[in-house]
Amino acid sequence: MSNPLILGIESSCDETAVALVRGDRTIVAQRIASQDAEHRPFGGVVPELAARAHVDRLTPMVAEVLGEAGVTLADVDAVAATAGPGLIGGVMVGLVTGKALAWGAGKPLLAINHLEGHALSPRLADASLQFPYLLLLVSGGHCQLLGVEGVGRYRRLATTIDDAIGEAFDKTAKILGLGFPGGPRVEQAAARGNARRFALPRPLLGSDEPHFSFAGLKSAVLRQWQALPDKTDTDRDDLAAAFQLAATDCLVDRTARAIAAFPQATALVVAGGVASNQAIRAALSGLATANGLPFVAPPLWLCTDNAAMIAWAGAERLTLSPAERLTLSPAERLTLSPAERFKLDLVDGLDAPARPRWPLDPGAEAVRGAGVRA
Ligand code: KG4
Ligand code: ZN
Image 1: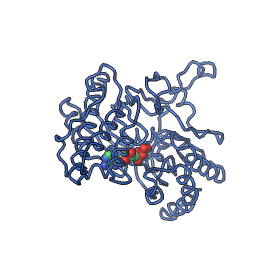
Image 2 (image 1 turned 90 degrees about the vertical axis):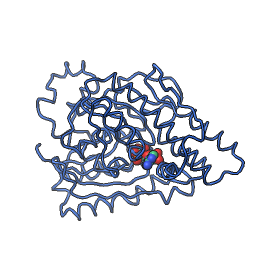
Image 3 (image 1 turned 90 degrees about the horizontal axis):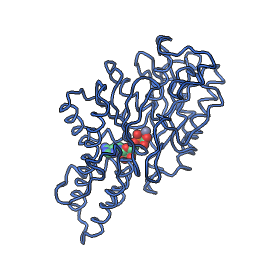
């Protein structure tokens, strides 16, 4: 299919989003409804409230997006819905909505991995970005380095052994009383602060192990904050700045290691909500330049959760050339890795499961540590 029109649906966390995207990268129409107001009183995302808000908003938003584009479901080539990983109630709302629309309109369903949406989003913004590239995926639930070798072909080079980096930003914001959502608030406070006033640990910096760790950093922020007698605005800004610098140093160090481990990369790419942080973008850009690699970061709205990246992941799948797809007998299929088999199963059945955990690279080894996300 050369220029498919895809309806994308995203509901895996606290953004309800719907988009219509074409294979030629045109974003025909889109809506993103944040639930910040619902979750702010609780200082974090409450899964049940998120799922209910998705139920209330999704159907009207689909109608709005189709209306704005002046099309109906009959004009759409496929419905792409996030099928995981994420908060399971919300994922189920979006996936079931996508299934109902696909079934009702007689269109194919594409059950999209949310992480794949983030991983391919830089190619929606930048047509010149070719495979393979090294991707640093930094969000509220994930902190991974991936070798992106092609559509459906992801090699996990590193992940976090405890907290995701976005989680560390959010918890730091909570400790410092900066409010919700945490990441942008910490960035604003850090811009005013003196990062050198507090000495904070940089977990796994220089380690032979490829992975990330942020739990010790977050605990150190808590200890330093509790030890401050007055807890002034300056204290708050300085500690936010020290945290952001330590976290950035860890990201740069681990990414430098991955550049050496994945020398075939043609670019260093960053995606996910934390990629909207300007200090982190600047540090990664410097690292890419020092290694002779182009640095690619999607526009800010495409870094945080949205449905255009989900529709785009669907478009990438539908526009794979026949040569890129595998044509094998059923017996031969059994010998394939899950990533390879994915290329045969371009379209999903209406029984596609909602998955709270869904690693992009099923072959990646488990890492030490508790609470590790997919
Ligand atoms: O990708 P995303 O929108 O949702 C997930 O899939 O998790 O990422 C949300 C995360 C949150 O932890 C949020 O605090 C963080 O991204 N974030 C930031 C910034 N903007 C969002 N972290 C640091 N600096 C920012 N400017
Ligand atoms: Zn996300």
